[in-house]
Amino acid sequence: MIINDNVVTLSNETLTACSDAEPATIGHFHNFGFSTVPFFTTIPGKRVIGRAVTVKIPSLDSTVLHKVTEMVGPGDILMVDRAGDQQYAALGGLVSYALNVRKVEAVIVDGAVTDIDEIRNMGLLVFYRRLSAVTTRLCGTDGEINTPISCGGVSVIPGDIVIADENGFVVLKPEEVEPICKEAVEKHQNGEPDIRAKLDAGARMASLTMADEMVEKTMMK
Image (cartoon, rainbow, N blue to C red; front, side):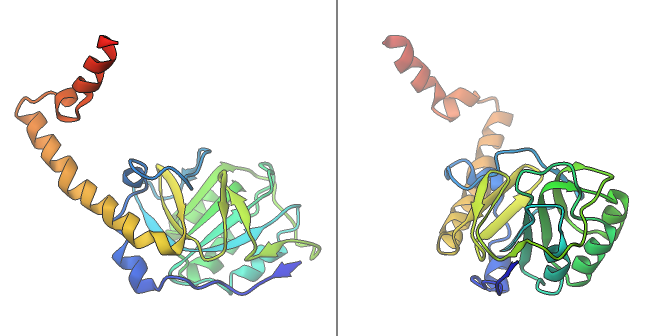
């Protein structure tokens, strides 16, 4: 087993200041760090931002997931790498309860979970690949906490900043979070309302976005 301390990068106050940025808006101008596989969510419509606390469970042994429940808290998002396994559920009701008591922001499991009604009812935000009735075991043989992992097709380093909602998630380096989130909020607040108002007044989408000019240039070739 490998167990490392959490990597605390941005403060909870800074995370809160960046919490209005949406992954889908960031995706308009930023190209890297986005999840590439589908996830389900326990709370549709909810968005979250936090520091990555990583767990790798490469076998049926989920001992480290029990251990990490005492290491997380507000401002943390627990990222679980199941090393390709989609059959055995590592996260269930009891571990979710322990994480919820610690007030973790969210859990992202690149694999299966179980006890989904129980997790929904406690209000824990979990993103997961599928549901399964068969679970991992406590073996005490392997697993890693706070090492580099792959989750949802994205490389994640402990302390990276994760922004997630039901559209997907994006993993950002701490130093790029504030400028990217600022640009996303400005784009969402200033650009889209103006375009929507013009569309309501009868303007054409392709004219507003300059798609007309691009089409014209292409047709002239």
